[in-house]
Image 1 (cartoon, rainbow, N blue to C red):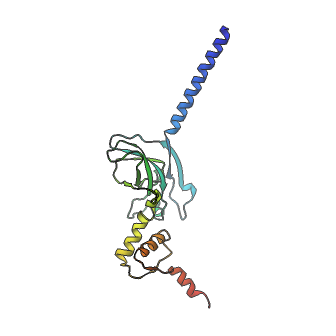
Image 2 (spheres, one colour; image 1 turned 30 degrees about the horizontal axis):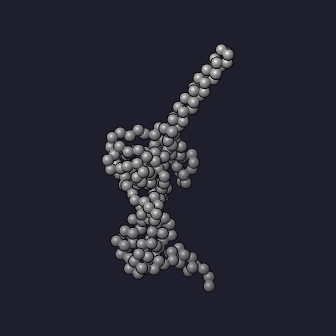
Length: 216
């Protein structure tokens, strides 16, 4: 009997230790996040070797900060230019550092008076799972049945604003829109902006040129 009780006690202690270690492992895993870093500067078309998937710690937040988990990120043509080490209108990406880009995320922890857990945020710290902010450079967005969070990276975001301002303010839209297929991301927003003015969106310049070249 004494031997049996001793064996039970040892088994119980072993199970407690296993459970403790497993909980610790799960806790440590939950504190990790992943980021995509620029590993090297590409020559021509970027390749997988130019990027590195890095695991790091989820940042702690202090008073006046929020922690955001990204749900959507935007990959845009201008990012290729930022992979070069050259002077431009925006700073180049740094080797060994996380990439940046437009993103939509949800606040998962907040110590900021203007943001609450569950708020959707638009920012520029894409290419990573989690990031923190003091509220500068981010915008709280409204989502609902008719508005998806990802819309703010498209028609309600930079591409939509570029299309609308270029068409309405700079181009001073009148009746017909000649759209160029060299900017495919802008095309849906251009067409939508044109429809708002009840204008007719013409075929693309490329399609018209192809038709002129076709015999008959």
